[in-house]
Amino acid sequence: MFEFKMPSLGADMENGTLVLWHVKPGDTVKRGDIIADVETDKGVIEVEVWEPGTISELLIEPGRKIAVGTVMALLQSEKEPVEKIAEAPQPQVSVGPEREHRLRVSPLARKRAAERGLDLALIHGTGPYGAITVEDVEKAPTAREAAPAPDKSAAMRQAIAQSMARSKREIPHYYLQTEINLQKAIGWLEGFNQNRSLSERVLPAALFIKATAKACQKVPEMNGYWMDGNFHPSTAVHVGLAISLRQGGLVGPALHHVESLGLPDIMKGMLDLVARARSGKLRSSEISDPTITITNLGEQGVETVFGVIYPPQVALLGFGRITPRPWADQNMLGVMPCVSLTLSADHRASDGHRGGLFLNHIKHFLEDPESLEEAPHGS
Amino acid sequence: MDRETMRTRLLHALATIAPESSGSPLNDKASLQDQLDLDSVDMLNYVIQVQKDFHMEIPNNEYRKFLTLEDAITYLQKIPGMEMQV
Image: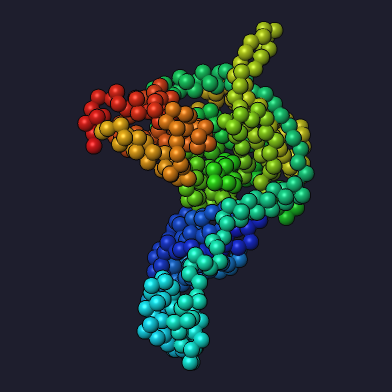
């Protein structure tokens, strides 16, 4: 038997509210299956299970707010013989004295409660033996008059504030910037897209993501987590994409294993991730797994962005607007489409020299776009 | 399919990728990106949704016809058989 616990879905997440279960006792699950929806300050997240097994017992009811690490369910692992899971007992009405008294309602009070759309179970009775009277029903607030719904956008703002404040407090940031000539990349992309349908169109952002993953394999100090006083490099490159939410807030979900994705798969993954981020359907692994993050503010007209690292990551890349700039090459002056690329990096994990090498690798990959078009591993 | 139905379907496709845009008043001649704060990924998702909803393939080089509602409707009206679709 093993425990499924409330995962941490962000650097400063302390608790979450279980919205609903996607499974019931007796269901078998495999790694990556969605087991529940949990509401956090960053919206509703689909939580995945990490080990295969059979659901034995669900310990938390929907609607409950629980701390990170709370045991939510018990599962039997695949190696154990599956015991017959007893059917969950039907919920029974409590027969304690308090419950009996609450059910005492005059017919008139019951009728008035129905007219006002009130739940009798939530009304305090002041009549004999706690009976609910008409006066009790008239005085009870409706759902609208009750405590207002929590302001989700304010909660997300608060979560971002805590995470960014922690980042600036704990991470000694250093910053580097470089300019990249995208003439070849844009020309190459036009040719790449020419014989493809709209659904297969590749945007420049996909080139930025792939170049980042390849550079992470050359300079691994940029790809991983700072935890417990040490840097833990990651062999996989899960690139977080900073996505601003129009209703306010920011999320940075991961595109997994970019090191083994081709450009079309990166595009497909990016379109899917952005669409689900906008409609609040991200998965727990996407929230917790980024090993490095990219922010791309060029479409907002920003030329250069010096970002704040998302802890426990150790680096953040910022791409600005693609804009025509004067460019000197072999003693000739021309005008080229260029982009400003910045690196915010954790000085505990890397130094400026390695940061400079990292940016240079990205620059070389983008200036030689054919190097980015590689078949995924195993194909 | 008349013009009004085309517009309604385009707005439905928009609402699929930008749910918070539902009900927002829109200027048909102005850029959707500017009015709804959409980026290039949102626009691509929108045009892919339009392809599904209108049962058609939009060539890569016609992508920019969907930057405003007015241009999109004008483009759709020229597609043979589109007016006969329900």
